[in-house]
Image: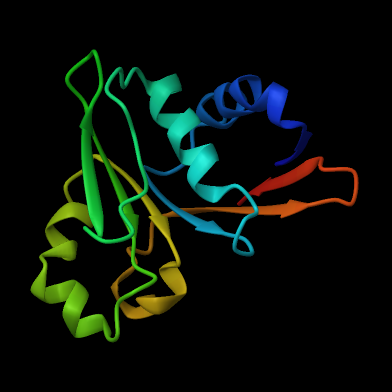
Length: 135
């Protein structure tokens, strides 16, 4: 699925992604500043997370709960030096929990990603419009 959106349409785009019934583990690709974290925050809101969301750049993972008691995990593994660090923090337990797992910079942990996952790639056009591809 390929969607184009401006930031003012991000909530509608997030709703379309959820309606597409992606796998619960979603990898997010895109250049720094493409809007991966912003889109994940909007997905969390769409899923019913009412708490404030933020990038887990320094904590590696943030946990949120939806208003229907579902758990959502947001990972930013950019700072990891090895896949062993991810295993040490128990990432496999999160990824195979059956809960939503949104992962930024997943290329740092290629051998740890479950076979059943979806990928969202976000790119920015010159006019500021985003192109989102869900595979």
